[in-house]
Length: 75
Image (cartoon, rainbow, N blue to C red; front, side, top):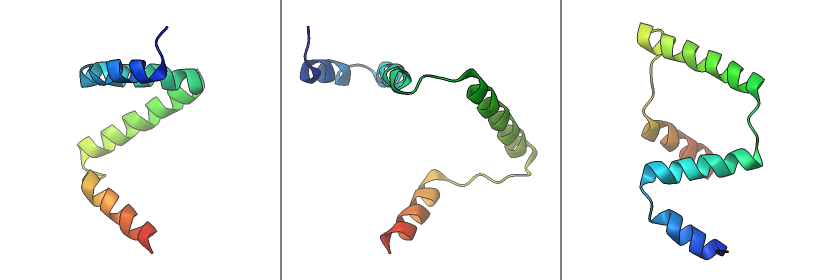
């Protein structure tokens, strides 16, 4: 059996899409999905997408969001 170091090195050599799938799979073992919560999140995601498409919500670039967070927590 491979140790953690060997598994990590092997995983790091994979394409980003495959690494993301592995991460998702491992996270699901720590926090199993809940169908009801997933259903609620899907409803929220669809509503937010509709708001963006209609123009009733304005997107904020990620770098701006993270900049605000950093400034807020630096003090």
